Length: 334
Image 1 (cartoon, rainbow, N blue to C red):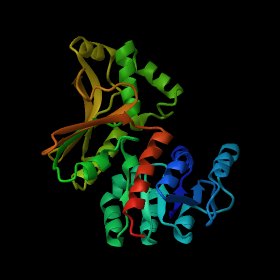
Image 2 (cartoon, rainbow, N blue to C red; image 1 turned 90 degrees about the horizontal axis):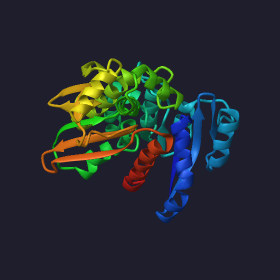
Image 3 (cartoon, helix red, strand yellow; image 1 turned 30 degrees about the vertical axis):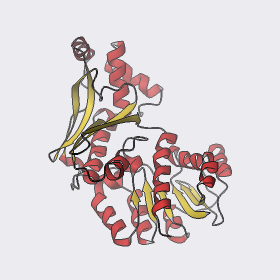
Image 4 (cartoon, helix red, strand yellow; image 1 turned 30 degrees about the horizontal axis):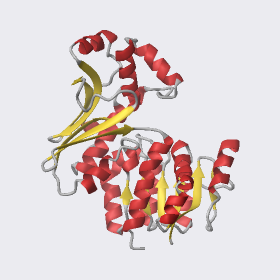
């Protein structure tokens, strides 16, 4: 049995999803000869540390009942620097202004000899090249499947399953909120404001939906794709962005009459990055509905490969994180 010691830095929806996933997959992990031992968990109010292994069920219950996992003072950096473990799962909220606290957490992890897995888009959108270089210089793994597409394995597909292919371009739908709004507007002929309100009531859209509906979230994800897949040094400023907030039911109805749908499409090709509403034929692989995400990858050898799935959700995102954990476990020399 190989034991890997893990910290979960950030215990919101995604962090709790990771904890629940480790619990639910215990039998599978046992059969694989893998013991994942969570030795540190932090949230915004404090942390729990137990170098012999945290009782995950008790931690989840405490979070639910008290609003925090904390059994003592301290922050994520304290766990990363002071607790002996192998993998830092960095799932603090995305901050696109300066990448903090995730950026400092990742730098500290690499500086103290720990692999990093993250769902946090901010540090990657701002400092991808630096973080990748830190990982390579220290011989550590840097895995970030969960930053783009939720459960949809875009980076695993490109870097592993399609290894040897040259990727010529990627286009996709990377924001479930926008896709839900456009689908409802088209199907029900409802105005944008009404559908947005419905999406907020259902928890699909944030109270402040600006990042989603103005295309900012999609653009950030496209930057990560550009830097990871095409080795660009792109930032948000390099993306030509148009959101969905000015699309009318009349425009969608006209598209529908001509067998098209309107989707907010991200595209990276020939060094250009764009996020904008586009007319998509109804039978096209990008014409997915609801909150689904989709990525269509054009390669020189395999041709076009298209994958679709749930682009958000705590367990769906945790699925990608668990995949990254198992990649490190199976490829680590320790």
